[in-house]
Length: 206
Image 1 (cartoon, rainbow, N blue to C red):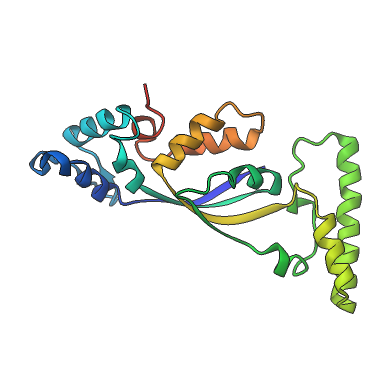
Image 2: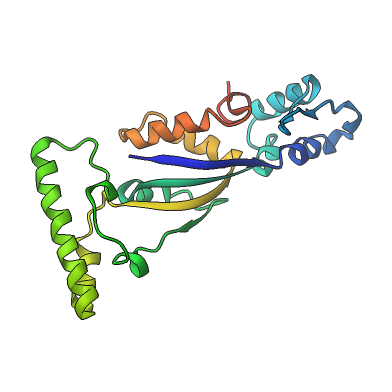
């Protein structure tokens, strides 16, 4: 399971203006804002952007200045793979250590969409036991119960993080993960394709 919400793409105007700095070609800028306040690349600017994006990382530096913010809810096992992308990305997460006991455990707190029925029944027992331990910890405040929660918590537990990255990060992620075994990566790559000019600037290497 993965959920991507509150997507915000920023700084496209400044990025394309900066892309024209090397040739002092600002007079050829033809982009504009539409009636909804969205920045639209004009024919000249889009042509330059595509040319630079396909010319390789040394030439497409401007896409590193196109920023994306998004709230991602995903299981811990997915976050462990996402955390390999440290350069140019930032994430603020909900705190497992501080807030693990703050709400009742429910099956919906975990990713179970690919479990067999037998495993799902076992998982329901794990969730029920975690809830017992949580209530015991709230009542008695024993650190040993808190440790039971932390150390028993399955990797399928869903965590939300607010993440920021740029189009260059997303290009690297897309080509590294689009054929990955985890369905969560396929859905993440599908989300990438919904971003403004994603096919031209993020995935259009050829």
